[in-house]
Length: 90
Image 1: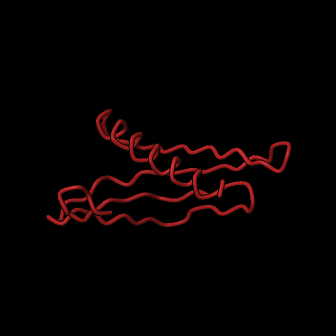
Image 2: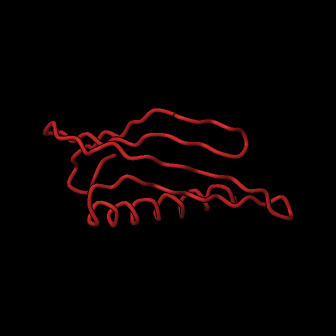
Image 3: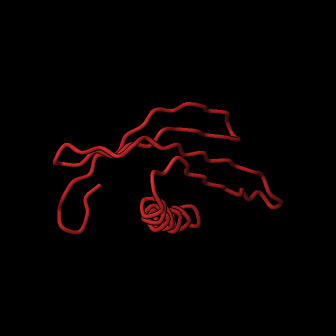
């Protein structure tokens, strides 16, 4: 991920659970150019079939080390969900 000042933050994780087409669970890690790393967190995505061929996606991201970290991820995930919604409604 490249932030506005041009700095690169490396994101990676490991899939812990894959249950097609219902659930995806993976670790979420961030490493910074200066060598720092955030503590590992856990992301859980669930997919529920709705009427009309639609799907409800629920995202839970847990294990944050403080409120500031949790809050910063809300903005990031909100942006992801807005962009993915645009992709699937094309």
